[in-house]
Image: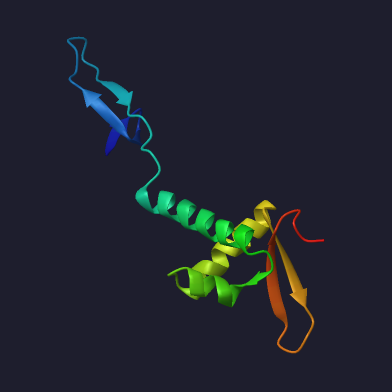
Amino acid sequence: MLTRGAGFLTPMCVRTPAPSEGFATFHLLPAPPYSKSKRRESSLQHEVYEIICQNPGITRKEILQKVNLHPTNVSKRISRLVKKGKVIRIREHVPGNITRYYPAGAHT
């Protein structure tokens, strides 16, 4: 909801009836909780992380077989886990260049 206040539009405000002094009062609404999509994204990322923890050295193809997600979504979640430092990515330089994923601290 957008309302006009102090010469600009203010998101998430509710206007109360104008008092007798001739000015209106605005109250900010509390921020909405995480959307369902954010919660789902977080739970899917956790699911991918749990699979990697249970199967150290797993490949992306093997993760895809365990979850019902599009390959791009799996890659994004793995990349986020790598950026956060929760997962380590090891590329094996063999024919086919296999990439394996390990929980941080588990690979020796």
